[in-house]
Image (cartoon, rainbow, N blue to C red; front, top):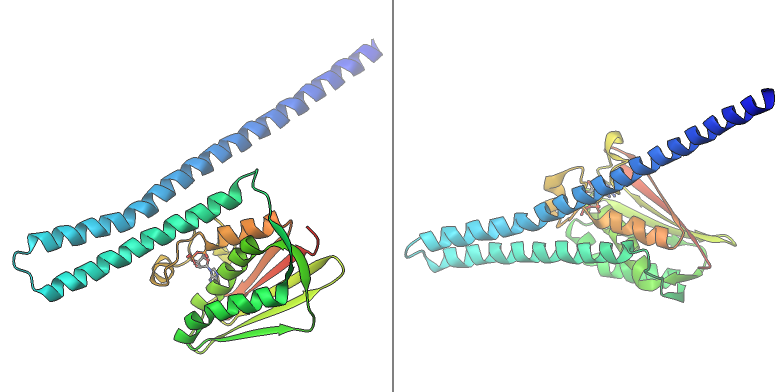
Length: 259
Ligand code: ADP
């Protein structure tokens, strides 16, 4: 009597546990399916926007009989800008898809991280100069780590580029590098516009932007931080962000020295 009852009860519990786990799994699958559908719909929208502009520009020009040559030039410049934008979205999408594939492996080399960061800063210097933003690199040590140079450069570039883009005129971006026996740490501190509290959890989401207009103005696709996060995660690293609106943002990265 007692023993059997105990078994029955336990059996019930187990079935309940299994059914709960199963429910959770289906929920997660549905969630994945939903986020997949959302992604496809976002991609279509983002890719269509420049095309719509291009069509309007071309149609307008074609409907103007005997338009002056200056108008042609102006419209063609706008069309070229929209094509550049489309190109950037496609390139970012390809980067993201490449970093998202399960079977993608890291191409590990022993890389001097000091030099890697200096190279990124050199490439971003012209962008910083436009708004007279000071780029500062601070470190007390030479860090050599086993990383995928292309993928880490992509991730770091996106984060530092944001620190410049979402900054104020005459602002600054400070990058610091440190390490212990297991990890190296990169900190990117900017004196920029900051991120509102309610947005901070969403900034790594694909296509999420706090300010669509500002992002667009600076050639943003809303994919930069999704790419950066994937790049860091692929290195079994960790990325953290702290921000205060109107004061600035700090990204902290922790990446294993040995991959
Ligand atoms: P985008 O192409 O729009 O820059 P990202 O994925 O790189 O897209 O970033 C998503 C959003 O997060 C940006 O649109 C911006 O609103 C916000 N953001 C990212 N980095 C910063 C930063 N350093 N300071 C303030 N806002 C930022």
